[in-house]
Length: 318
Image (cartoon, rainbow, N blue to C red):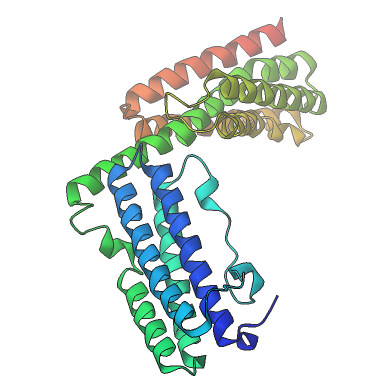
C-alpha cells in the first residue's frame, strides 16, 4: 500500500475518479436493497448515485485535460488511511439505520480525502475542483438533512420507520421470543423430574444441559427450515434460526445453572426463583413488542410454566 503523501497529482486524481465510481455503485446497491421495503430512501440513494456520477465526470474531464486518456488503476485499498468497512451493500436484508449511518461515514471520508488532496495539489484548476467537491460532499454529509427534503417527507419517513420496526420484530424479536419461551418452559419438566427423582444436583445439571442444548439445536433448525423469508420478509433463515436456537438454549440454561450449587434444596429454590424471573421477562417482551396486555401475557405464560413445572415434579417424585 502507498502512503497518500507519496501519490503523484495524476494518481490522486485517478484515485478520486475510482472512489466516485465505487461510491456510485455502492449507493446503487443500497437503492436496490432498500427498494422493496423503503422506496423513498431508495430514491434518495438513486439521486446520490447520480450525483457521484456527475462528480466522476468532472474529475475525469479534468484528468483527461491534464494527463491524457490513460487512467491508472488505483483504489482505496491501495492507499493507507482509508477506513476499511464491511461490504454492507452485499448483505440482505439491508437495515435502514445501518445504511444511513454507513452512507454518512462515506460522505465524511470522501470530503476529508478531497480536502487533503487539495492541500497537496500544485495545479490551481485541480485544487479548485477538489475544494468544490469537498464542499459538495459536505452539503450531503448528513443524511438526516437530505432525508427530510421533498423525497423523504415526514409521512414517508414515519412509514419507513414503521416498516423497519416491523422487520426487526419479524427477524429478531419473534424468533428470539419463541426460542426463549420454548427453552424456559419445555425444559422445566425434564429438569425438575431429574431433580426430584435423583436429589443429585450434578446429575440434574447434566440433564438440564442436555435438554437446553438439544432444544436449542432442534428449535434453531426448525426455525431456519420453516421459512426462507422470500415472501414473508422475515429475513435470512439461518439468522432467524441462530437467534431462535441461542435464545432457546439460554432459556433452558437459566434455571439449569443453579444446580451447580451442591446443596439440593438451595439449588432448587434458586432455580425456581430464576424460572419466575424468566416467565416475567417473557411476559414483558410480549407486552413490549407484541402488543399483548401485560396481565394477559403474564397469565398465559405463568399458567403454562406452572403446569409444566408441576408435571416435572410429579413425574420425578413418582
